Length: 110
Image (cartoon, rainbow, N blue to C red; front, top):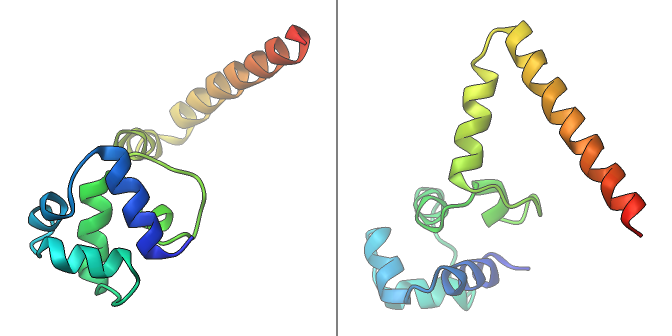
């Protein structure tokens, strides 16, 4: 998916117009349309503002990853990484156990 296609898909998913997105990133709806049609490429500063306005990571917006992390998830990860090593290990042990249990339930449900 191109950057323009990604912007279009995310904008539509959020239910906002090109004009509204343009206002959020300090440009016009016409320019957003040109980005979406891949006629022009936004500067890195504008891409950062677009990612923020669309609530996704920069990597996801530019197609570097298919893992869509919203800002709330990213903020949670920041909080976890700021914990002392032992506390962070405890959090990951709990998360790993929950994932394992979820996968087991899913496997036995079939």
